[in-house]
Image 1 (cartoon, one colour):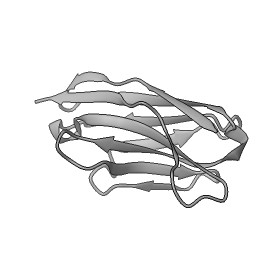
Image 2 (tube, helix red, strand yellow):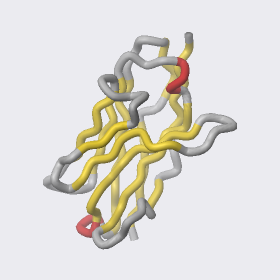
Image 3 (cartoon, rainbow, N blue to C red):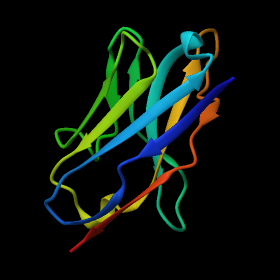
Image 4 (cartoon, rainbow, N blue to C red):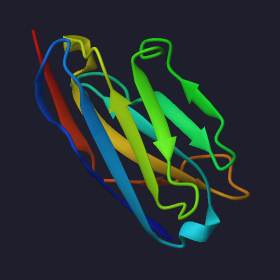
Length: 119
């Protein structure tokens, strides 16, 4: 099993920046890809960004050019989300997720960290 713990959320003004961190523990050697999802009140959870073990990244259209996902490939247990030019619509609970080798889904989730962007 893989356990994930996020940190770095908070309150920021529109146009500001935050960096989220996620630490994985447990069977980290089995992790293939990691990602960030978010869920705003009354809305479904949505993909923000993912990064594979090879470093390939994918972003939601709404965050392209503003958010950057990165990963500590050597240790395979750290993933970051740098968020620039934040907008009020980025306000949500952000969740770290991991997909293990051989799986098609992100099956491990953190508890979430709140990001609030004021206008």
